Length: 115
Picture 1 (cartoon, helix red, strand yellow):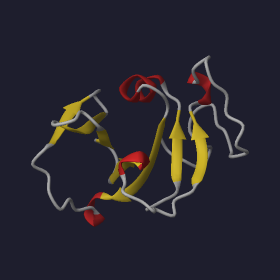
Picture 2: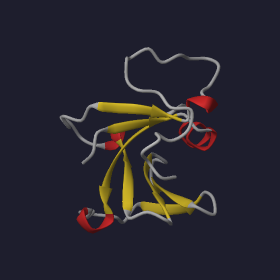
Picture 3: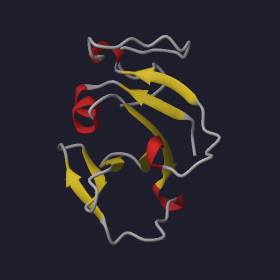
C-alpha cells in the first residue's frame, strides 16, 4: 500500500465529515475476504464510494478512470506502518482547522500527478 494522502476537497469533506486519509492499491492486487456488507454508491460521474451497509462506515472509493482502489486509512486494522505523504486540495480546506504537520501541501493535485 502506498503512504497516506490527505484530501481536503469538498466532496471528501462532505462524505467523511472532515478530510479523508486514504492509502491505495491496484485493483488487481486487492481482495476482500468478505464483502456481504459492502455497498457501492456512485458519488459522481467520476467515482464511487464503498461503505458498510451495517454501520455506515466509509471504507473505499474508486475512480472510474484509474486502476487503484483507495482505502480509508482509519478502516484498516493496525498496526499498518503507513505514514502520511502529502495534503491535496488545500484550496478547499475547511475554515475550522489548519494543517501544520510539515508534509507537502498542494492546492489541487501535485504537479507530477494526473487527476
